[in-house]
Length: 167
Ligand SMILES: Cc1cc2nc3c(=O)[nH]c(=O)nc-3n(C[C@H](O)[C@H](O)[C@H](O)COP(=O)(O)O)c2cc1C
Image (cartoon, rainbow, N blue to C red; front, side, top):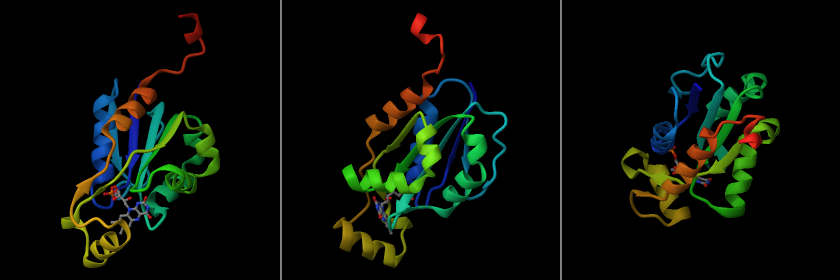
């Protein structure tokens, strides 16, 4: 099955997660950075994974625009959704719910948060200041959960067949 992973990254973490997911999937997998390719042609793919990162409570506008413009097509795909973010638990769940349209969350085979990372070298002065003040993090660090990334990839990789129960 052919898979497209469409993602948006601000400082590189979501791109690394997208690459890790791609490395775990069988079949042909293509990556699409929504910043440079905001309107990928979805017709060739049966499976689409959409991911972005949370900044000040919101996913990037490019992810929102892609989901809005492609909602009808995405509802016909085997769909996976993920966010990269610092928070966990209830806050992460709320951020995930706000990141994607309700009908896509309902349709998705899997929708998860996978942790986040801070790359101080890629942040501007205000971003560094905010991260230090709000998250109390003083330098580059990764809180991505690699096992959660693998679990998500494995779950997405399992085929949905109405005849599976016969096996
Ligand atoms: C300026 C700034 C604001 C952030 N705001 C949030 C936030 O509101 N909620 C959250 O869970 N994570 C927040 N984060 C953490 C990012 O979601 C996390 O670093 C993520 O891995 C970034 O992914 P990217 O490198 O692909 O952009 C913030 C990070 C930065 C630098």
